[in-house]
Amino acid sequence: MEALEIIRKNDGIDKFETFIQENDSTLVVSENGMEVIIYHMPKGLIGCFAPISEETIESYSILDGKIKLDDQIEDQILEIGDSFILKGIPFGIPFTVIEDLTLVVSTNSIIYLSDKEKNQKLCEIMNKVQASDGDTKDHCERVKELCLSMIRYLPFDYRRTDELLLAARFHDCGKIMVPREILIKPAKLDNAEYEIMKTHPYESYKIVKTYFKNDIADIVLQHHERIDGKGYPYGLAGDDILFEAKIIAVADAYDAMVTPRPYNRGKSIEEAIAELKRNAGTQFDEQCVEALLQHLQMSVKL
Image 1 (cartoon, one colour):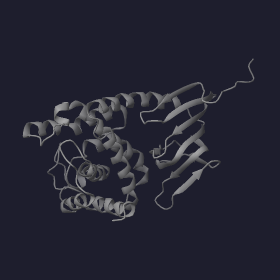
Image 2: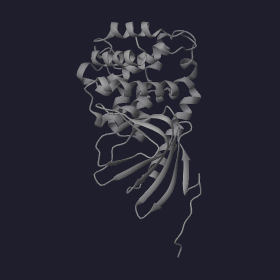
Image 3: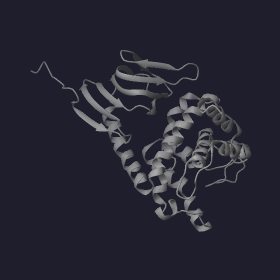
Image 4: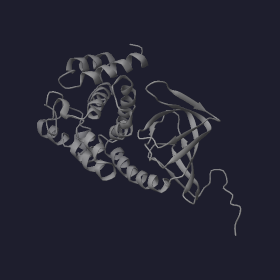
């Protein structure tokens, strides 16, 4: 009977790299319903620790680097030697990696294989998105980061953070169904091309629904609806639009405006802000526009 099992550095029972560059997970222990997993995360990574059941306990210890746990009241910055425990939390906890991070988690739940399977599917999506239009993947990541910053200034239910960030990350994945010549056309789309482009929220919805809960897919479906009911695909208006979709709509529009593209030099921050203000209450939710402006005031010192 074996009594000693040695795991060498950078080794383990199993390992996978995620669709986020330089981010990987290594399963070190899987015995009697307990797992020990080591995560490597690059500086600048923004994510969310997912909600966990009442029966689950997860203990995190920082072996290297620094991480910020985002809280509406007070941020917590943790570094080498610090630990934190999550147990039975019904909401996600957003985080930002401040310095390249090595994090070890011990849990009484079997999560590694399900995470690996989901990651493989997400890699397939993101690789297709990258192949069709490389900027779409980067755009989705920037929109996700903006959404996380905006909720600090909103009456947002933090139990919905995980859903918001997942929806933001994959809100445009349906663009893989849009012909590449339309995605990268170096001129304004004609009416027929625009109608094809307008199918991407529903295509994104179909993809996301395959991997995530229906409410995440619904957020994705609605991210081009407008407060005045003139959006697409269904012309929803006002309170019929999910709040998370309203947040993504503002972040999405802002990033699209300020990002240079082959057909567009990109607006200045000031020009983009003026456009958001001009359309607040008609195209965009006023609270969400104000939340983005507050974030920009703090981050770029307007």
